Amino acid sequence: MKTTYIPVLFSLLLVLGCTDLDEVLYDKLPESVYPESEAQIASMSVDAYKQLQPLADDQGWWFWAQEVSSDELVFPTRDADWDDGGKWRVMYQHTWNNDVEGVNRMWDKFYSGVTRSNQIIDMLRQLPQSDAIDAKIKEVEVVRSYFFYLIMDNYGDAPYLTTATDVPEQPFKTSRAAIFDSLTATVENNLSALKDIDNKYMATRYFGFALLSKLYLNSEVYTGIAQWDKAGAYADSIINSGLYTLDGTVTGPFVTENQSNSEIIFSIPYDEDDYQGFRIHMRTLHYQSNLTYDMSVGPWNGCAVTYQHFLTYEDNDLRKAAYFLYGPQYDSKGKPIIESVIGAPLNLDPVIPAIRMDATFTPTEIRTTGARIRKYEIKKGAKENLSNDLPLFRLTDFYLIKAECEIRLGNNGDEWINPIRERAGVDGFTDATLDDLLAERGRELFAEGVRRQDLIRFGEFTKVWWAKGDEQGGTSNDPTVKTFPIPKWATDANPNLLLDAE
Image 1 (spheres, rainbow, N blue to C red):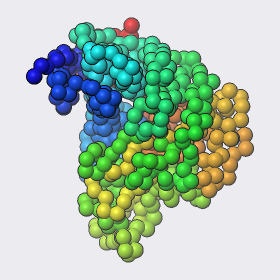
Image 2 (image 1 turned 135 degrees about the vertical axis):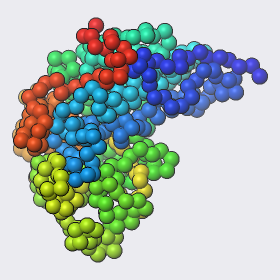
Image 3 (image 1 turned 180 degrees about the vertical axis):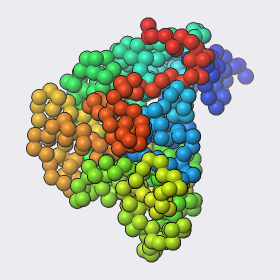
Image 4 (image 1 turned 60 degrees about the vertical axis):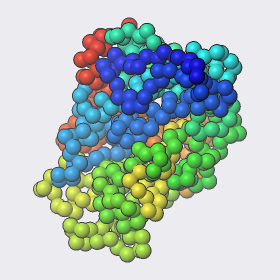
């Protein structure tokens, strides 16, 4: 059989020093799998999307870095549990360095996404060209743009490579502003080639609108120039599309079977057996919460909602009970759970006494403090991995983006905030301020990976909050923490990464 060989670079990085690409890369394309139909062409982009899979947990660290570096979530040390060399605490207290797990793994996985996207694009460009191939190239370029958006957002200046062939051995950094300009131009130029459909696992035209809205929303942070009008216009493109509508409940977008939810624009399609990597319930639930959910495994009693964030919800806010697990705990048959060490009914107290609870604290304080996260449905019989899809772009976010842009432009944003508040059972705002808007984003988008970015945009990220920059340690008023440092292992392999961006 004749074989058509497609040369592709086996490893890019060089940028990374070495990167953890654990799958066999294309080195040839046998004639038997040569794309002859749109379905075959469509399948060629799958591996680019697969690089999103590690981002929700500690293999990729994106989700945790966004949440635990904010004022929403904390992993308190519970006597001997959850110290883990301080890796969670340094994220919360903004005392990380260039050789901690979160910094290392985010960089690696983000560039794995860039590399794999570039390899696919290079391969597609060597095929006989057609409208279908061109559209697929443009789609994967937009997926790659999403990975570069994550890199730019988290690390600032970084190498910007758009091919996997003939790359320099030790590339220099490109400025954040220049990356921003290239990303916005790429996505805008590619919009017309993206499919005008609702597909929650594909870079559709609405994925493009969402990414552009996010980029322009944070333009002032990335470039020094605010572009609220463009951010709002791209939010309008989603809101007015007719493809997405607000769910009638505060829980609908987060149930186990949320793959068809009307609010979700794009998500990572997790499955407890076949597409694993979403374990937020294991990291937050009390050891004995398995009795509540008839789980087949025991949770790890880790992260909790900070009390400062817990208090931002009114008691009648439907999201408070829907998103948090607190108070007396019962098993699946309605019987009180008896805490195994304390010997008394389990009662989750939202007040966490300290970020480091050693043996001087009581067993009750150590084991049962902090409201836990249940925003993502924990179904009866849940396993170690959830089957809930993780939304990366959700309509509600773009309602709030539209509201923010209007307020920043001197207009009224109530029209886009109040449907969200009313769904939550609380009164709408009259002439909402930016402070109102930020607080509402915190309440609605809790544990969706947006809080770090929001706090930076609103100038709140470096301020003092509980157990960060106060008597419990940590740092405040340090502008360098608005980006993470490039990992030491990467700069050791490529000293050019220590230089200012070109």
